[in-house]
Length: 155
Ligand code: DQA
Image (cartoon, rainbow, N blue to C red; front, top):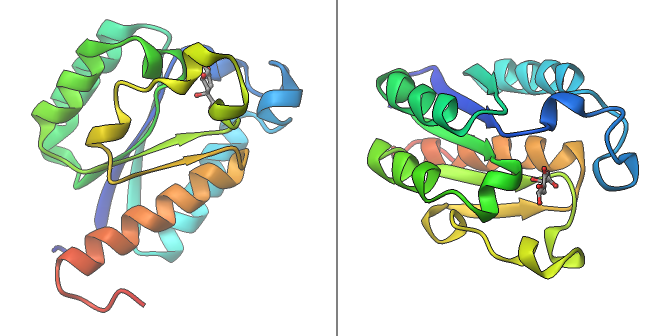
């Protein structure tokens, strides 16, 4: 494992509206604020991030393909595409890179259609319901996983 871990942070449809979108589900922090918190934590953990938000499934699939060689792992909040997108599932599987699935809201406390994820069985793990902390826990989990699987100290 190289010293600096590279992580691709993928954000799906409507997450550009965080801060004013259904704050009872998603909290009040904007995606820019989440990005900046993640970059701070990543830096402290010896990781660097590339970041995407898109409302377009095709653009997200293209981004995964184009950046696979540039990352060691993905941190994924696929938003609604979590529940619908075979194309994103296939892109992540095809990348051969591990990923953690995160959600701001607790999807299991919401409508039944949100209880199904087309990604979870491929993920290292899933973190759901902790608002912005879901992303931070997910990042931490990925860094630990990557360092651990390289045989380096995980603690
Ligand atoms: C979400 C949960 C999804 O069900 C929803 O479609 C989203 C956001 C979350 O972060 O809680 O857009 O992924």
